[in-house]
Image 1 (tube, one colour):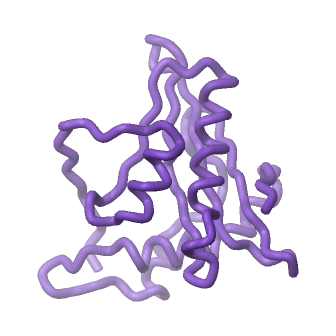
Image 2 (image 1 turned 180 degrees about the vertical axis):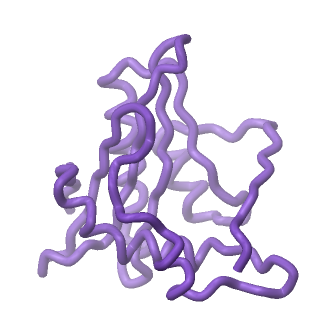
Length: 153
């Protein structure tokens, strides 16, 4: 299984997977969930909008379709280069085959090569597959409290 860097001009290829990720990771808010169509209308065109440098890695199935992706962001807030594994998603059909682990490991290799001083990733503690992939790639849990805001459905 090979991981490849996706050129910025081809970021649109991951949009369907980004939408799948948004749909899957929604928490019911006041008993409502946003539909895929609502999220598609809310999500801006897929482009590198983070301040800093963006790197997207993908895994492809033998037929060339995407099995998963990870989106890494590198930025310097003035205290040294930092990194975030901002998004990681594996299509349901490819889960359990190590795709997420390989993508997370690619992110760790990027952070090491770029001499990142701090890197983070966010996930739900209950997402055992993600936690396992991130741990195998060198990430460790912390005691930080994370609070989130989501748009109205």
